[in-house]
Length: 253
Ligand SMILES: Nc1ncnc2c1ncn2[C@@H]1O[C@H](COP(=O)(O)OP(=O)(O)OP(=O)(O)O)[C@@H](O)[C@H]1O
Image (tube, rainbow, N blue to C red):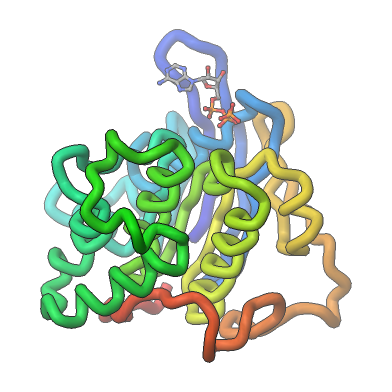
């Protein structure tokens, strides 16, 4: 994933991002940080193809997104799991069915869907709410449904906007373990957050937005780098978080 000289501006407003250049290596894990209003959500929007940059080049999975035609967009989007700040759950579908949706679209068998969705919803503490409709859940519970939906099909790229913003510290850590496990299995992860405790506890690289541009900060010494498939910081595969059944074909980035 590559941003080269990217600028973002909303209609008549001032420029939000200007001349942003960085590369997200496949299998990397980054926190996206910056003050409120710095442009974190806007940058995520560009990454999930929800906003066209006003200038510059964005490449996703080796494709210049400006060169994509409308028919190509959905397949690319399906490789991206997104946790939206406002959740965007489907209100008339149960918790279970919201999370099952990406697997149903991928054609996974119902028996497998049942197993994996139930496992994942148990991991995020929602096993007693499988049949609940989103409007009957608390904000933190809806956030966890949204996270489960974003990770269940093991996307190539996970983008999460304040994914621990509505949960307590214990659940926040559990969710971080889930993201780390997904990353260990090869997913590139970007998490926008204000949670300094989380950022300092998990020493991942940081994309810092300041005055419309990005600085990459790496808190780790060179020797601490895991390989993209590395295991640093992730719980053991056995007994760790479940991450769903699907590895998308053509997942190379
Ligand atoms: N659709 C929009 N139209 C016009 N301006 C917008 C729009 N969306 C965001 N902005 C403006 O762009 C700037 C960056 O917003 P953005 O949501 O990307 O920041 P953020 O870093 O994610 O903030 P927060 O941490 O508070 O969520 C803000 O000044 C915001 O008002």
